[in-house]
Amino acid sequence: MKSMSVELRYAESALAPMHRGLCESSDLDREVVLGGQSVDGVETVSSFVYGEPDAYEALLTDREAVLEYDITPTEDGCFVYVRQELGPEGLSLLDSLAQDTVVVVPPIEFRSDRTMALTLVGHGDDLRAVLDSFPEAVTVDVRRVSDGVTAHDTAVSARQQDALRAAWDLGYYEIPRRNGIEAVADELDCAVSTASELLRRAEAHAVGEVLGGDV
Image 1 (cartoon, helix red, strand yellow):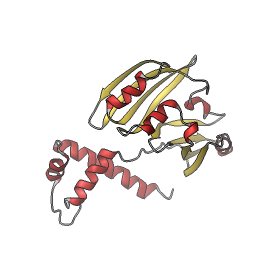
Image 2: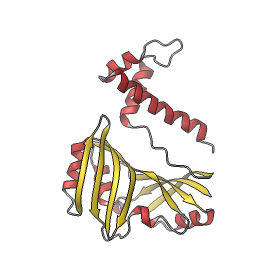
Image 3: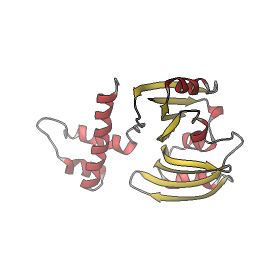
Image 4: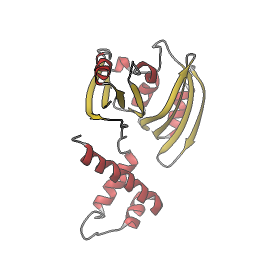
């Protein structure tokens, strides 16, 4: 069994409506789909959106195909539950990529630069067949191939980047340390626990990239 992490870059004409709205909004960074399914032409998806909850809700209310949704705001964005009718493009992404032995392993990341990142798991021949199935309007970049089952590691959020930059500028990573986590929290105008969590998540991603980048 093989795992393949890919990045898909869409031509503007090939963007799905919600992805297009994400790209066009200055208040939204990316959407990370945590799970979903399609039954009888209706897609149900749970995701986390990095950005302003009101901006994402505006995209949902503008679409007649949306049957219902629920939004729960958080520090970095919002959790979203959406049920919507599938458009003329047919099957959802989760189904269209699941050819033969191939399955999509969540999360799936939709970014505001017209790219999408995800991991596919399956037999090598079937993974190659999936790569050949994308239309010309989609450019495929294979980022990593490995043995066994893995999942896509989402990128550092804008808020986490702010935390890293603040910590770096304040000397948090200097030896000896010039300022502690309290100074980082003051710079970000958040609780110490929040600043600590933001740094831990960003640091975990950075370490994973260093250790796993050549796999």
